[in-house]
Structures are given as structure tokens and as C-alpha cells.
Length: 213
Image 1 (tube, rainbow, N blue to C red):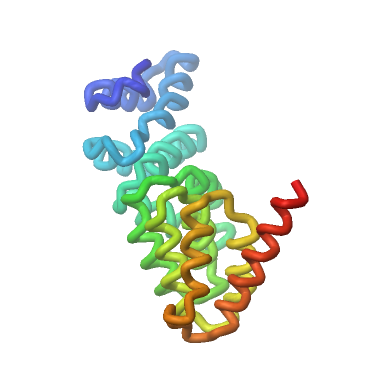
Image 2: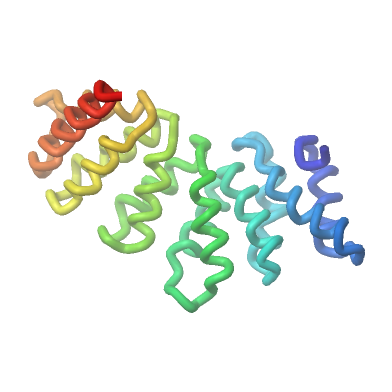
């Protein structure tokens, strides 16, 4: 009830219980409930409250809950925390890294798109940051993510063709299919035409697969 109340007071109480409660069952319940605080980008008060917990805690249960709350809220400041943590080298902070990687699968709000798009454009292809940004953007229903992916593909060279193919053939969202179809227009510029041809092939494979079903 507290996690779905959508108020700062409820979040304050859960955080207080999760960090100070001595009774184990209540403490663990409060930790778990923090994961439900993310309001899909509608709770501006939340990020400043829970981001310090992410930075200061070493409790795996609390880190997992906070990471999910940050991801589902999708504030740029939270994405800017989760993405580097998820891309950290093995052995550097594995508990925090695992929590961040899992949380990124819960990112779905439009307010997270610009920072993910920036990471996709600026990170070396094949790096963890690049791969995580790409994968996270492919899970959005919102068309802004599809446009960010297409903008990157238009500017990228042919080395990313395998990623384009994976994106198109595995997508679940009409917004992403529409962006792919629009890119087949000859007026749409591509740095490397190989990427357009892979999108064309991906759409053909996607349609064939769905016909078989």
C-alpha cells in the first residue's frame, strides 16, 4: 500500500523502515516495497530520495529494490547512475552491477530516452555501455526510442548491421516497425546502405515469422 501511494510521505516512511528497522521481517518488507515506488516518470520527488541509497548502501536486497525503482521512474539522473554501474568491469562492484543490469530491463518511460540515445551515439560499438543502451532502447513502446535507434543506424557504419537485424526481427512494438519501414524510403539518408538493406531483410524475416504463427 505504501509503495503504491504515490506520495513523498509514503516513500519517506518506507526508506526509514528499510534503513533503521531492527525487526527483520518488517525491514525486509520495507526494502522489497521500495522497488514499487517508481511511478513511470510521474514522481519527481523520488529520485533525490533514493539515489543516495544506491550510492551509499552495500545491502544487495536494498540495492536491487532501489535500482528497480530508479529504472521504473526513468529520471535522467537515475539512468545516469544505473548505466555506468551496469557497464562496470567484472569484479569492480559485482553486486551493484548485477542490480543495475537487471533494473535496466525495467526502463520504459520516455524521459529515459535522451540519455540512452546519447550513450548509444557516443559509446564505442561493442562496449558494455553501447550494448546496454541499445538493448534498453529496443524494449520501449514509445516511438521516441525507435527514432533514437534509427538515428543511430543512419549514422553508423556497416559493422552494426547484425544489431539492426536483431532489433527488427525480435521487436514486439508497432512503433519500432513503423520506424524501420519509414527508413526504407530512398529519401532517408544512411551513411552505409548496408544498414538499410539489413533493415529491409529484417522486416521481411519478421513478417515471414509472424505469418508462420
